[in-house]
Length: 413
Image (cartoon, rainbow, N blue to C red; front, side):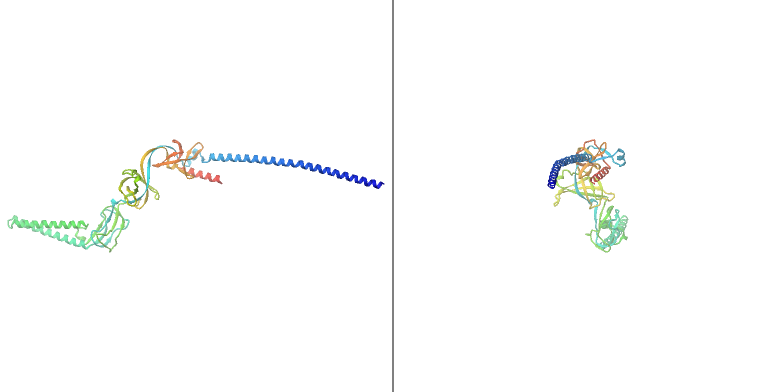
C-alpha cells in the first residue's frame, strides 16, 4: 500500500515538472519574438541615420566643388608679389587699327641691281681673280681672258695710230710748202684730207676696243679683262682657268644684296586691297625677324598658271640678313577702323585653346576668356569678354599662366 502511494506521488511530481518547463519555454519563445522586432526597428533607425549622414556629406562635397569652381582661374597675389614677378599692368582702351591681309611671299634678287657678266670676245681663261660669294667693288677685275680677237684689234689700233702720225707730218710739210709758194694748194688739200681720214680710222678703232671693254694700253697685249659693273656680290661663277669662252658664255652673276625684293601673288578678289604705296609688314618666322615696307609694284597681268598678279616690295638689306630664296609672310595693311577695346599682344594667353587675359582684381588676377579680332602694331582687338578701361596683365602674363597651370595640376592630384 505504501509502495503504490509512493509511485503515484512520483508520477504526479514528474507531470508537474514537465508542465512547468513547457510554460517556461513558451515564455522564452514569446520573449524572443518580442525581442526580434526591436532589433529590426533598430536596423531601420541605423540605416536612416547613415542615409542622413551620406546626404550631409554629399551636400558638403557639392558645396566644396561649387566653392572650387568659383575660385577657378583666380590667382591671389599682392602688389609686392606682382612687382617682384615683373608683371606689367595696362588698361584696355580704344584704338585705331588696320584691317590686314596676309600673303605668303619670297625674298628675291633685286633685278634692277643684278647682272650676268659675259665676255665680249672669245678666248681662253687665263686668270680668275674672285671667288663665289665674294664682295667686289665697281671696276674690280673679275677674270682675265687671252683673246686672238683682242690681239687683232690691238694691231689695227697700232696701225691706225701710225698712219695718223704719218698723215700729220705730211700735212705739216705740205702746208709749209704751200705757204712758201713752193707747191700747189691742191697738194696741201690732199694732205689735209689724208690726215682727216687717218684720224677717223683711229677713232673707229678705239671705239671698237672700247665697245668690247678692252684696254687701250699697248702693254695689255691680248689680255681681255672682265670688270665688275657696280658694287655687288658674286652669286654665281661659271668659268675656270683654261676654259674656252665665247660671247654667249655667262661667266659671273653679280647682285647688289644691299637691296632685295619681297614678292608675292595676289588673286583678283584681293587686288582692291593691295595698291601701290600701301604699307606692309614682312616677317620671317624662321629668323624671328620683321621689317616694314611699302608696295612698289603691282603687276598688270595675271599669271597663266597661278592666275595671280605679281606684287613687289623693295627692302633695304644693309646687313644681308634677307637672303634671296627665303620664304616670308607679308601682311598688307588695308582700311583703318576704330576698335572699341584693345590690349597689347603680350596680354593674350591661350588657356585650354581659348584666348584669355588676366584681369586685375582685389585678390590678384582673374582669368578671363575673350574673343579677339584684328591685330595691328603689337595690339589685339577684343570683340567680346572685356570692357574698356579694365586693367590686365601685359608683359609677364605668361608667368600667371604658368602659375595657373601649377594650381590645376595640384588640384588634379
